[in-house]
Amino acid sequence: MKVKQRFVAYYRVSTRKQGASGLGLEAQRTAVGNYLGDRTAKVVAEFTEIESGKRSDRPALDQALTAARVHQAALVVAKVDRLTRSVGFLSRLLEAGVDVRFADLPTIEGPTGRFMLQQMAAVAELEAGLISSRTRAALQAAKARGQQLGGNRGATLSSKARAKGRDTQVGLAQRRANDLAPLLDELRCEGNSTPTDIARALTARGVPTARGSTTWSALQVMRIQSRLGRKRSDRAVSGAQS
Image 1 (cartoon, rainbow, N blue to C red):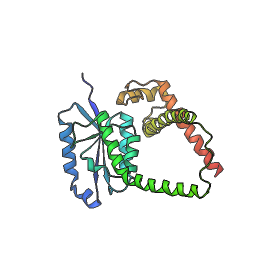
Image 2 (image 1 turned 60 degrees about the horizontal axis):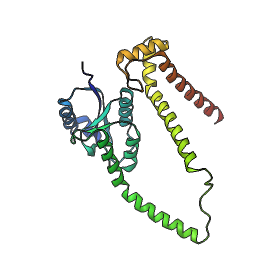
Image 3 (image 1 turned 90 degrees about the vertical axis):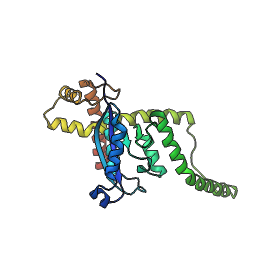
Image 4 (image 1 turned 60 degrees about the vertical axis):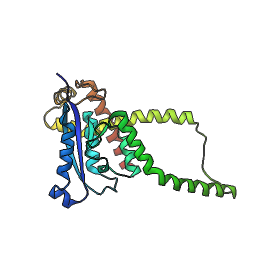
């Protein structure tokens, strides 16, 4: 039996009036439905944002990205312009670790889709780059006047790169644990009290592991619980010091 490809649908309307009336929303649903119609696809979750496209703080999108990571699903939107022209937002989307699909560009997916997002971000960054060039010119002029600039540059690039690589891996593992935390709490409320119970419940729900398997072990659950426990401990220490 062929495994269905998982998708998380994300819709956006610009005003609360549109959100209440469905204006524009039904067209987006239809576009996504047509895009998925000829596919062996399973929509695991849907999220609707009522937000201005100029803003980057979109809680529904954050929830959609979390759901996509948890289920190792692709995020599908009706149109490219349903995202944004903001370079900060596009950069965040690229860093989210989620495959993004566009119903109005059905042939764009995988590495090609990521490349397109990168180009969109590059275009949006053009103006910021021009501003940055002017800023650098001003700093060079200040340096020529004898003004002291910058701070300690003692760390080598290689050591920084290695540290960044380690931090990236730790960050990805912690993000995965954070994404799964609400689901683990839900499973505990349903009576799954031990790591073995939780592993069986995750397997039954078809939630993929970090490596893509849908069969969980108690050890994997314990590792996630350990990461979440360390995070809670860090928060407690921080709170006590403040």
